[in-house]
Amino acid sequence: MTTFLEEVNRRIDGVPIQRCYHCRKCTAGCPIAFAMEYNPNKIIRMIQNGKKADVLNSSTIWLCASCETCVTRCPNDVDIARMMDVLREMAIEERVDIREKNILKFHEAFLSSVKMGGRINEPFMIANYKLKSGDYFSDVGMGLSMLMKGKLSLFSPRTKDIKAVKKIFNETKA
Amino acid sequence: MKVSYYPGCSLHATGREYDESVKAVSSALQIELKEVDDWSCCGASSAHMTNYKLSVALPARNLIAAEKDGMDVMVPCAACFNRFKMAQHHLRENSALKSEVEGIIGKEYRDSIAVRNPIDIIYNDIGIDALAGKVTRKLTGLKPVSYYGCLLLRPPEVCEFENYENPYMLDAIMNTLGAESKNWSCKTDCCGGSLTLGKTEIVVHLVNKLMRMANEADANCLVTACPVCFANLDMRAGKDLSLPVFYFTELVALALGLQGPEKWFKMHNVDPMPLIKSSGLL
Image 1 (tube, rainbow over the protein chains, first blue to last red):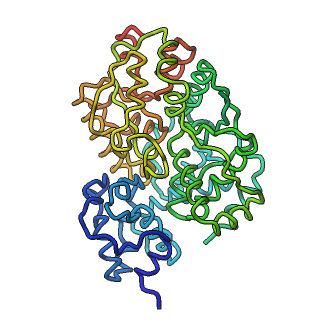
Image 2: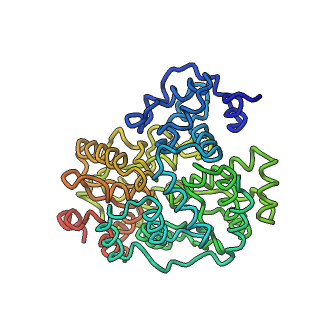
Image 3: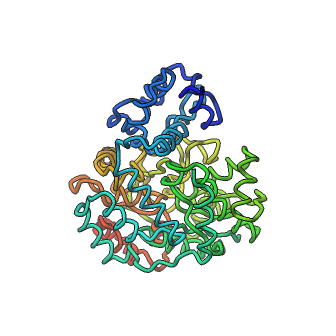
């Protein structure tokens, strides 16, 4: 049977995360570490220790903003940002209870807007996010002001060959 | 010079000033832009955070469409730029993935063009001296800090941007325009990016820190080349801390005496006109 560590390494398909010697440079440079329940290097240790449920249920994997500071500074070239992508994909595939639901709902709203029009229609995407998340009222004033300034266009042009875009979505489905 | 142009979704909506100012500046600097035919979204953070293959295939469709015109492609949005460079990198490194993606798109990817951002093109191809020669209105009084953010720079071996821990191209461009670029330690820090809707409080925390540091550096504005950074800085900072934010091309256009800045500045959330007027620039 494949261990959690082996599965994560297989998906990263690069430098194995055992190269980490916990210098904590990733955590020291991480702009979001202050809000994470487990720091980036702690996640690596937890994977090594087989703590799959705790990792996939953690807020950390969703709060990572993919700024890539960690991998840029890692002395052992461990691709921590890619590792976070892999963990998010695994959490979705294994249907675990996602800790940061609104962050995933944002990604879903974003991608469904792309699938529908080939390009992001921001008012549609934001409305879709609000319906999914139930967060109806924040930023309403800001949205209206942006609409007035012509920054949110209700009728932005779409990709003509929308079939090609839909095909990409259908054939890359995990 | 002539290049393909990929505006991306933001530049047609929240980042309209960026699109219009890139076009105005390009035309003034004799950079001819040809929009990529029937482009589609690059997938941005949401694709790579949830589906690796999708995150390569979406930019690949656009790279293939751009290749048809045989010119390097200018990608002003830092987020799109990053996804294009990443896709290029993965398609080079992983031949199985490349053939799979080509199968889905139904076209061959030849890896025949470079992905460029406008900072790099203006600094390296047009050159600082040529730019200086076109300045008709020196931006005296503007003291910007250059905010490069994450996605133009990292990971460095993919983005191939100069000096990724302490970049200077944007600072050099600002000084050439007659502005007094201020040094600070947050050039390459993160604004929180796509967390702006799903986890707003983190973005507020990060942009407030950036604004405090900009104030501490004695800057009176920030300059950026990313519509995600721009939106977060312009809309999420506390009122008592906010400084005006500019796309770097808006300031190039202002210094070159081009039409447009007044109209673009009206689209900003933090009104830059008091600063522009008190500096005698409009």
